[in-house]
Length: 205
Image 1: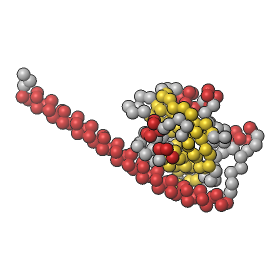
Image 2 (image 1 turned 180 degrees about the vertical axis):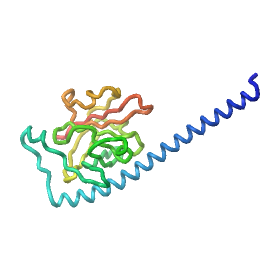
Image 3 (image 1 turned 120 degrees about the vertical axis):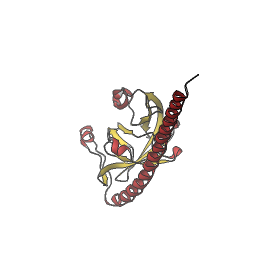
Image 4 (image 1 turned 180 degrees about the horizontal axis):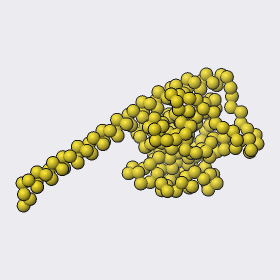
């Protein structure tokens, strides 16, 4: 039989662990809700600015390979962060802003460009696995449409061609376009954070 004092200590420890887990769960829900609201507001502001820019300029696609490599993606700056456009996956009901550069602070508000460019067909976008960010991409169907609207109003149509699990250490496999020639990759952590889900897309011809 467990002594009464020891039993009480175990009970208190169990309660503390339960409260800690509950607090962490509530914090994650709060953080995900904040991310959803931030993304929604950013998309509205981006779409308004894109509409204005679209009246002024049209994207000029470079003709030579050298010019393509040197061409920088245009951006719109909002609250100190540059954005390259809006990503839409209609089958998942997602419409999300995409920051031009990634870091953990920017990821709290929106998916971010990890590397590459839509000019060179090697764009890689990362996002947290929040419910209204990239968590749903783990169930996107092959053949689903993906649209990227850049800040000049040019809409680029992609199609999902593969979905795979990638180890966190497989950086080259994630970003090297010469391995399989993916035009667009979206990735996020799977539940538990031990692996990543990578959604591979090809530009629609």
